[in-house]
Length: 120
Length: 115
Image 1 (cartoon, rainbow over the protein chains, first blue to last red):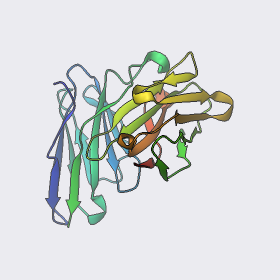
Image 2 (image 1 turned 45 degrees about the vertical axis):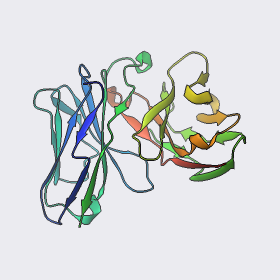
Image 3 (image 1 turned 120 degrees about the horizontal axis):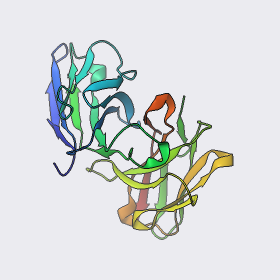
């Protein structure tokens, strides 16, 4: 598509429930990133995909968080047993590619509008 | 590990005042540097970027930033702000650390421009 699309835009859930957040990147972008933005903070890195594989998941806070990108395009971030502290805006971004020369310019991130998660 | 520090959390200016937002990064090797902006109710968008070459980078809406390698800085400037510049500004760095291009963001600076 023309931009990065994220659904849902807003999600309210109860503590302990399971949540899925979806990201549809720009067509042709091989790199996909998930970030989390809490109130008053900058985007915090969660996970990065190059193609179908998670190249770096070091930012996932714990094993309740998991993300997949089975066909190298759409990605789903999954949160199990949600906690109030998971409340944040979850941002997805894509770039043309995530590897290669640092000065190549291929790592400019295009962000989606985010999914605002509220855990009651 | 790469990191970014933004010195000002909240800046209030009158229209036509000059703006400078500080940004320092910690990585010593080759870096790409970015400023992203988030207008109220909108998503993050790229304001300007530095990859190589001229350290003075010009972006959209009259913004510019200067890469000073010796100071590990990439400050954002605008000679005369407008009310429409009210937004949150994020500095970001990518170093290629770890073999891929992870982008790390600062905590952001909220700019409020008073008409």
